[in-house]
Image 1 (cartoon, one colour):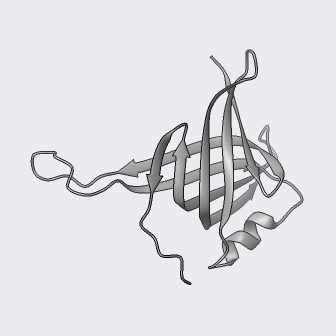
Image 2 (cartoon, one colour; image 1 turned 30 degrees about the vertical axis):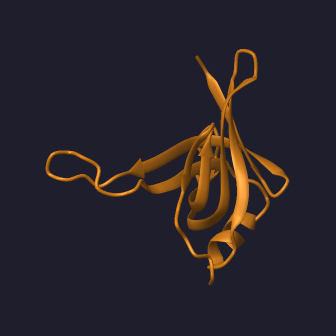
Length: 131
């Protein structure tokens, strides 16, 4: 089965080429969880556009954004699942150009969001956002 993903952010839609979400819990010597779920960083690679908004977001230490990533089944373009994030900081930005690639310009970003809702599975970080 083939999939397609779109990022919606600030009224713009971006083609997602790669997506990773990593959540962990620390465990004791027996493997029993000892902490609340941690992490929840969202790594995305999107097709580059003429906008420099991702870089501006990365440069700011106070700017947060809300957005969503929708995963579609390509066969019928039906929505498979959706990840919504709120109060996300862009904590890493990397733009690259490779003339030999199918998608020559790409932007890789790493987001750290206060709240993540992945089709009803919710992770909330106990942050105080007083910056």
